[in-house]
Image (cartoon, rainbow, N blue to C red; front, side, top):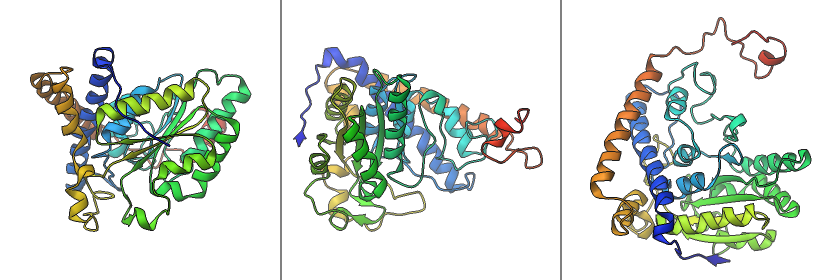
Length: 340
């Protein structure tokens, strides 16, 4: 399996890198706000941050095309959601229970989606979205609408141990579906370290067993992510079949905001993968003359104001009315056409 090195031509890819970084920044600032709201008791349910995974997630989302491709994000994919086109208000409305959100205030804060835009609602049973994306792509093939489409999902290392991961990836491999599966190997499945999860030296070795393309990348390095993940999407789109990308990184927070991650050894926290991908990306953009420090500071201010507006708007909106709401998942469409 290949460990790709960055090969981007800076002049050609300047706008791509700026776009990826902007999505990373928006996700980080938004999630910092969500963390504060959770700690203040304003959010019901868990809050799971993508801190440390933004370069991987945002690159994947930027590499896809809304309206043509399928993107099934997982719990740490706010950056990918943002890059794929999700407005911040969709996120804040869902976390704060607004009835005007995509899930109408009826579902868990991270279980949101807009299937009509190619974003299925997230499934908590990790690994399941590999099967889901494979099924969506296979359905498109049957309908004759698959041409040029790529389906992608980003899972954690723990999800690669599930039956759904195996079944979905095996189907995709046999049918040569245009799917990209990114494994964000953050070294812990909740608190279970890699050595207690799998015996292979690197998860990318699993690609050989399925007969699909396999790539590995330093998930803390924006330039490397941009090179490798866009190559995986290109291969899938051009008929190369499924591609497995393993991104090595470390989540820079607990499993959720309820978890202090005390099980992560200091040597890992202070190691190479413990560095902050956002800080690395900032240095790379400045050093390669893709952005100036002043531009980045201006973006931070703009995004902070955008996040504040989205939070304020969602906080002012009502939640679902239990006396008027039709709570069943499908009957409001088939049996209650007038239900809102």
